[in-house]
Length: 208
Length: 370
Image (cartoon, rainbow over all chains, first blue to last red; front, top):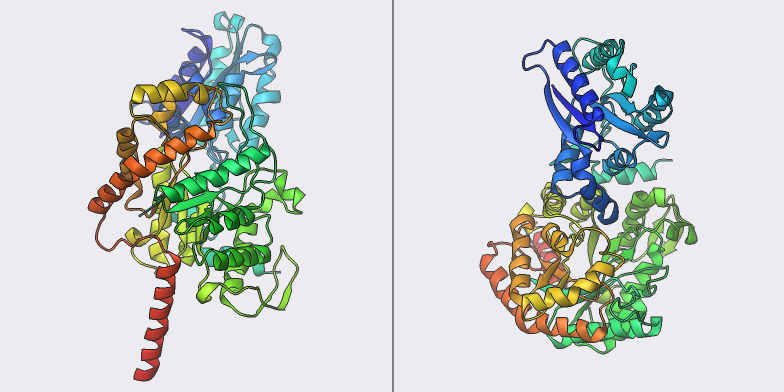
C-alpha cells in the first residue's frame, strides 16, 4: 500500500513535518510494519514556486507534476498544515487547488495540523474536513492537532496512534470498506483516459 | 504537411513602448499577417473567435472573406469557431458561403470557448459546454450533407424541412478540425467522425499533448477510419526568431515578462523548456518543431503563433518572412524525409472532391457488378 504524506511546513526542521512523520510511522507500524506500507513525503515548501506557476500557467512543472501523480496514485494520504490566520496555509490550499478535482475521490485522508496554541485546534473541523469532504475524500474520523505544548504533554501519542490505526483500517487493512471512485458508467478506458463512446454521448442528448 | 499562422486576435499593449494598438489597427494587422503568410508561401491562416475585449475577431467569416479576395492559395481557417455558442445553422451557412467565395480554400476548427460569461451572453450555459459541442456539431454535420434536414434537439429550436444555403461547394463540406486542450470527449468526437484533431499545445508540456493525441489516434482507428498513424493531427507552437539566438532572447524578454499570457510566472527559460515556445534562431525553431513529431507522431498541420505578447506588426511580419524563407522550406523537407509510408496529407478541398468522386465511382461499380 502506498501512503503519501503532504506536509505544508515552512521551516526546516518543522513541527508540521514532524507530525507527518510521526503519523506515517504509526501507520506503518499499525499495518504490521515490514513492507506493508510504502511511505512518500511531499514537502510543499520545495514546490512553492511551481505551485504558484501552475496557478498562472495552468500546468504543473516537472517536480509538482510528479508530486500530484504521487498523491493521485496513493492508497491513503496524511495531510498536515500549519495554522495560518485561523485556517490551513495558503500554500497548502493552493496545492489542492491545482490537484485534479477527482484525484481524491474515495481516498482515505488523515487530516492533521500544527499551531502555536491549542486555541486553533478546531481548524481540523472547520477548515480541513470541509475541504476534503468537497474533494470527496474519506476523511479519517480522528484528526490530529498538535500545539506547541502538546509536544511535551501526554495524549499526543495516543491521538497519533488512534488516527493512524483508523487510516490503516480505511486503506484496506481490515477496516471498513472504502468507497471507490465514482462508478465508471458507460466509459471505456483508453490510455490514461476514460472515454464515453461517442454514440452514447449523442444518444444521451436525444433521450427525453 | 501544411504550415501556417494562427492568431488569437488580442489587443495587447506593447510593453516596450506602453502603446496599445486601436481595434482598427489590430484588425488591419491581422489581415496584413494573413497576406504576408500567402506571400511567403505558407499554407494556412487561422483566426480565433472572441466576443469580449481585449479581443477583436468576433466575425471570422467576414475577416476571412476579405482575406480570400486578396489571396490565391492560402487556406482560410479558424482557431477556433465556437460550436457551443454559435447557432450551427449559421455556421453551416457562413462557412459554405465563404467556401464558395474562396473557391474551396476553407476549413475550420471547432472549439468550445472557455470564457464563462460568453455563454450566457448567447443564451447558453457553460456547464453544458461538451453537450452543446456534441449536439451542435451533429446538426452542422447533417446540414452540410443532407439537402433537407428535419431535426429536433435539446439546445435549439427544431427544424422542419430546412435546407441550409448555399450548399457546400462541389457538394463537399469544408474539412473540420476539433480543437481541444484537455477534454477527452472532444478527441473522441473528432475520432468518431474521422475529422481532424488539433491539440493547441502552446501552453502545455509534451507529455500531455502526447496523451491527448494518442487517445484521438486510437479512437480514430477504433471507428474504422484508418490506422492510428493515418489520423489527421494538427499542433500549435509559438515562436520568436532572430538570426542570432541571443538577440532573439534579448528582444523578446520584455514582451514575455510583461505579456498577460506569459508574464509574472515561470521564466522565459522555464517556459521554453516546458512548452513549445521557442525563442532563438531559425535553426532552433526548426529543431524544436521537428521534435514535436517524436511525441505526436507524423502530423498534418503545424500552426505558429507569431503575433503574441504585444509585438508590433513590423516585427511580426519579419517573423513570417523568416518562417517562409528559412524555416518552413527546411521543415517541409525534413518532415517529408521522416514521414512513414501511408501517412496521408492534410485534407484539402481538391483532395476531398477527388475522394468523394472515387467513392461515388466505386459505389457505381458495385451496383453494376451486382
